[in-house]
Length: 364
Image 1 (cartoon, one colour):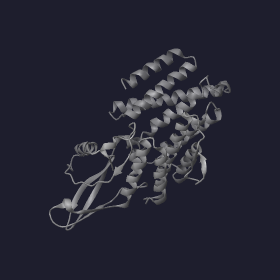
Image 2 (cartoon, rainbow, N blue to C red):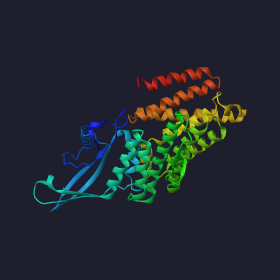
Image 3 (cartoon, one colour):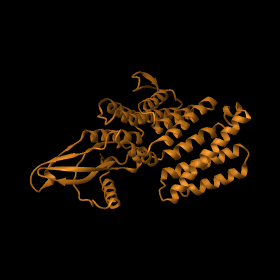
């Protein structure tokens, strides 16, 4: 799935987003995974590709079998581990080639259906990445209607990103002073506030796949954005993040690698700490309504969760497995921890946390 070179990268000011499918045959080493990935990554950058399906071909008499692998652009890495699994679009088992003779570049190709669905999903993510939320919503709506899913539970991923598109659109509207703008909600088919469409989409993802932690994170983000100093909504956000934490801890070994790769644990710790920490902000109404015991609970939980987020980043860095997203979340967690200490009158602890924020963030 390739972006046209002349339109630049999605998200650049004034750019549009277009895709065209393309198949090429290139030689890559089959015995060195790191070298193979590096070659494909360079190839993808050269042709402005967001997704490359590649792998090894074994030729027979007039046909060939294909063992597929995916390269997905790093800006989609968070979704990549989820959308190629057995309960999503499915790992495509074959690419059929037909033809005769030694000039294999002239053979015809036939892709399994899940590749088309996966490509359509990548297009939706590209539109989301370019802040073209209405177009992303339309793309996901069509995919939910006509997509060929390996299992019904795979639709939870599409509903998650549908919720994220509605949520981001609502946040953009809030910046213009209109958080309650109306959209036609895919889940209900009726005009509803855009923020409400986000909540319904996240809940639909949960209904389809109850052990999907990122849908709970999305719902928590909805309640946190909506809180506006309301204690009950801070509590609702914290409850959603806690559910995400419990689901993450309960996943089996098969899903564990996907959960870790999509960096759910550090997100959950940060967001849970954020929800409890923001309730302690003396500049918003909730703080005035908290008794000493509730303040203590918020304070203790915020410290524990924010510290845990930073520790995950530290351990990942020591193991040379950190990422820019983990760095960003750790810096935000450390900064929020500093605010919590400051709001609670612990000035020295606040200074230490802010210094750590500067150290984690570095020049970026």
